[in-house]
Length: 205
Image 1 (cartoon, helix red, strand yellow):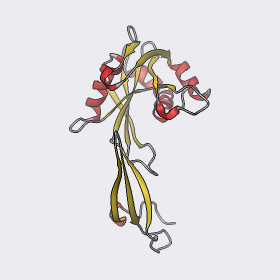
Image 2: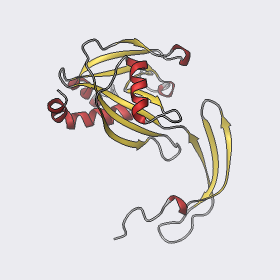
Image 3: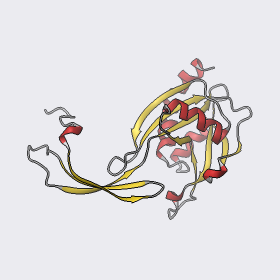
Image 4: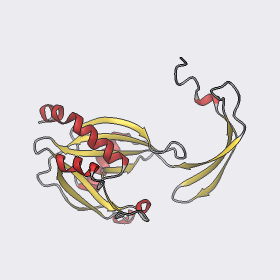
């Protein structure tokens, strides 16, 4: 049986590329071809590619109280759905040039929730929507204390309006299953926490 990953990035031939939109984000149009699994060459086809930088997300977790902090804020992409466009999410931010994901995690923890993470544990890196977007998420869990957590945060010049909530880990995990949490980073991180809680509570306490 053929093993996966027989092709590499160098097997993709980009014949033409142009920027079709440049605003807060960028959209490129590409004309490309690549080998097929049957040995033939794919005819030239076009795709639009959403150019978005990488981001870092952190699930703040207090192993002593077995509680997490989740952020509530408005998200334009959720408008038009049968739900509120105010979502419960992780601490998150875009990676700036020269910043490591760990530096982004600490910066955003302060700006969005008044939190410092010690330690930070890597969960995974994942592509958000590789069919049409370049964005990669660096996902972490960070140890915090929820003793004085919660409140209103956000950078006014970035039009952020954030409320930080403290939930028991059990309630946060339950919100995945009843649909109150339906964004990928939060789902992945909370399900990872569900698997790793005993280890974190023993090792981080």
